Image 1 (cartoon, rainbow, N blue to C red):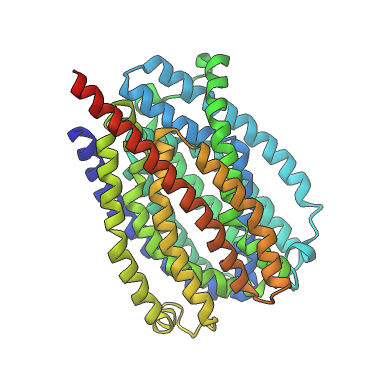
Image 2 (cartoon, rainbow, N blue to C red; image 1 turned 120 degrees about the horizontal axis):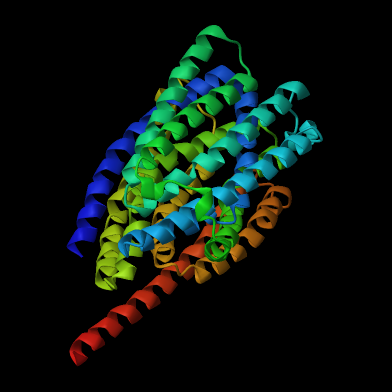
Length: 442
């Protein structure tokens, strides 16, 4: 238990430092990007990133499945099996990336840009070329991103955050150069993201595979291991689909049913409160892998204590969110350099949503670490089936606009939160009681 605790605290401390730096850079980048692109281009750019993120589902949960398998193999010192899981993951992801690239590039040229980005005044050429570059970016980093799963699995989540910070620094530096020497262009932004992400991930992958046991090789291809990886990955895959609908369709819905220009105010308001959920998530980064190790070692009391401490920290989290809520106009003016016109109801809802994400994050990370995600998957499926229709009804029937989109998110996340928290409580209580009974018998 002491080893798990030390790993958790050490990585959490490093994660806190790197994530704060990364977050600061990101929040400097947002107003610079907005000033460079203007409201319309910025809204379209955010929507493009949302659409492309959907393709991440195509990994069939392999990355998340690999993360748990790496933890298990390292804990049990099974290096041969470890190499097989890593090698098969890279083989499958590479094949999938090639398919996505071919299909994605072909499909891009048939997109009706006026339908997807309602009311836009940009040229079709600028939007299409930007999409092509983002698809290339995605496919390259889809493969390289497996290094993050390995790092998480071996309790080196701080490395992931370090290289994310490097990516953000490169993006910020590139954006400053773009603003000085070029005119507003989605294509330039897309190229910048491609270069920053690829360079950082190539170096990160090189750092991970220095250790030969984490180095993939075609000779370790094993159909049985591959099926096992796909098997556990499919549960995560279904969960990813449901979660993506819940968390990543806002910009698309607003762009399609309200207008691309409305994405900007909504996105920036959500991002401001997201700073709190991002800081809180630092505490949860190491939780998944630590719970996985604790489950293997049957240290369920450690998991129970970790949950209690994280729940207690939601109190100061709520106080900070209220502070941002009260000073919202001042903060956005200092941040963006201009006033942001946003309905107060949307601000209140974004504040509550940020806190709810923190609460929900505790229990889903525990479920992921324990490898018991059935209830989480069911709740996420229910939420995603409700989310889009409910958002459209709130927009069209009740004329709530962007407020309806956020309200729909909160209702759906509450479904998942209630189901997952009850499930974790029951599972932990049973395992703790079982271990206590076994100790009495011994």
